[in-house]
Each structure stands twice: as structure tokens, then as C-alpha cells.
Length: 174
Length: 132
Image 1 (cartoon, chains in turn blue, green):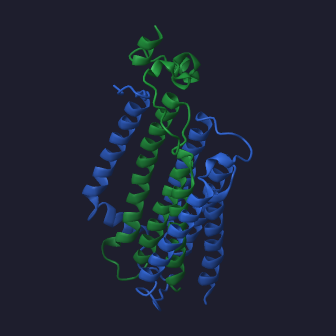
Image 2 (tube, each protein chain N blue to C red):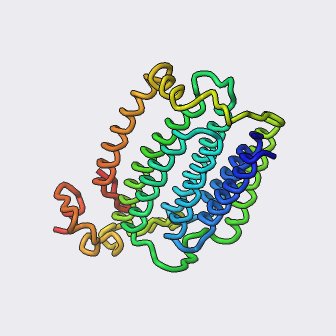
């Protein structure tokens, strides 16, 4: 095991533990805060893997924007402060969720791990840095990149339109 | 560095995300599970893209695209959740729909009780016609 392996195992353990806490905690606001820890340490994982740009974008967009949006949504929907057992499904449904989540993990691990078994990369002398990513984005991937800006605009207008929508029980929304 | 540790972490994150989607009733917390699944996919992309012979820098570029799409998705999903909260008064995804004949009898949907009603001032909404 090299130093990068050890650092990755430590940071990855923090990521997995905080992700587990964010889906099992009984405090609604704590779930969003554990998600923040998990996404932030995942940015650390990207750093260990040698992708500085992806780590920075992860910090800016996920930790800076998405978690703040989730916290705002929790505030606007009057999330209760303190432990609240009503935010989780009944126990039999949670048992099914554990079985399905474990099955997903087992399936993905059984599929992915043999593909890259024994593959090692020398990340101290990286071949793909920020320069290569920039050349690829504005070269090969330029049309999907431009399409993404249109997608963001459509999502913005769509969110505005949906937030003006009024859902009523028994009556068709306009 | 061995590339098996990131893949194991991605499998773990995807399983935790599936558990989070299935075991939560609050709509915002279901969204947190979806975010974890998306991050598992991102980690797989970054891991595979860190191999030296990856063409077009596809791993990191596609990760940036997925992060952008996730931002758009969260934006729309939270708008839907807020519309649900304003209309129904809760964001419990497992709640039984109240099957009343006359929706004006439902106290949860009464516009006078709606705290957001005064701030939005939505004159086009059909809720005002019910109130007047």
C-alpha cells in the first residue's frame, strides 16, 4: 500500500460513514449536514485521485450550492428541530431497504471490482491534468457543453413555472 | 495506487443511496439519497478516467457534466417539493391521499391557513377564486 492508498482509505471511510449517518439520522437538519460532510470528503477523494478541477467543482457546486438549496428547502417546509421518528418508513420497509441497498452494493462490487483488479496507476506523474480537461471540453465535448447551458436555463425557467403551480387535492392543477 | 478502493467506495455509496431513497418518508431526505447515488456514479467516472490511456479526458469531463445536471435536477425537484408543501401542507411521500369529494372542506388546503399565501400574492391562482 502506498501513501495515496492509505489516505484514500481514511478519507473514503469518512465519506461512507457520514453518508450512512445522513440516511439513518432521526434529525432532519442533521441529515443535510452529514450530506455536506460526505460530499466534502468525496471532494478529498477526488483530490487523492489526482483530479483537482473535479474536486473544486464538487466543492463549489455540491457543497456550496446544492446542500444550501436542500437546507433552504428544509427551512421552507418547516422541518422540525430535534429527533423525529416520522421521517423514516416503518421497520419492515426499512428491512427491505437494507436488503435492496446491500444487494445493490454486492452487485456493483461484484461487477466493478474484477474489471480493475490489480490495476495500479502512477498518480504522482499524471497524464491528464486541467489543461487536458480544458482542451477536451472546448474541443471534443463542446456541443454537449453548450447544450448543458441550455439545460440549466430550461431548469431555471421550469423551476420558476413549477413553483407558481398550485397543487390541490381533487382538483386538476392549472 | 490501486483502483479497487474507489470502486468499492462507489459501490458502498450507491447502496447507501438506495437505502436512503427507500427508507425515508420526507421528500427532501429522499432527494439526499438520490444525491448519494449520483455521487457514486461520479466516483466511478473519475476512477476510470484516472487511467493513463483514457481517451478525450472522458472521465473528468463527464463528471463535470453530471454535477451540472445534478444541480439542475435539484433545482426542479425542490420547486416540486415546495409546490407540494404549499398545496398539501406536508411533504410526506407515503401519506394516504385524502379522498374527499369537496376539496374546499379540506382544512390543510385552505388558503386562509396557508402561510405562503400572503407572501406570494398569486392573483392568477384558482385558490383565490375558492377563497372569494
